[in-house]
Amino acid sequence: MPKTSKQRQRSENYEDKVDSSRSQSDGLRENSLPTKLSKLADKYRALRRDYLILEEEYSSLVNEQKQIGRDIKKLKAQKGWILDKLVAFEGC
Image (cartoon, rainbow, N blue to C red; front, side, top):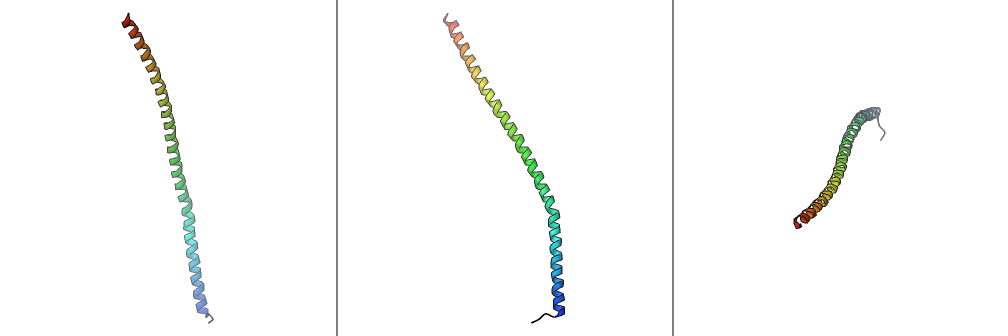
């Protein structure tokens, strides 16, 4: 059954409204997308910066721990040397 001119016009009006609402919602998405991406990028940069700071602190603490281990070995060696000297003096 062919459409009447009123039916065609209603159909065209409806399609225009749908297209209009789509373009408006697309425009909103396009405008908000850069904002969301910008916020995500900012969060990423902040997290990345915090991670790098923690990684640097960790590395520093590991190096400090290694140095402390070396210092402990030296002190144990000195303690042994001093103990040997004490035993030698007590034996005299």
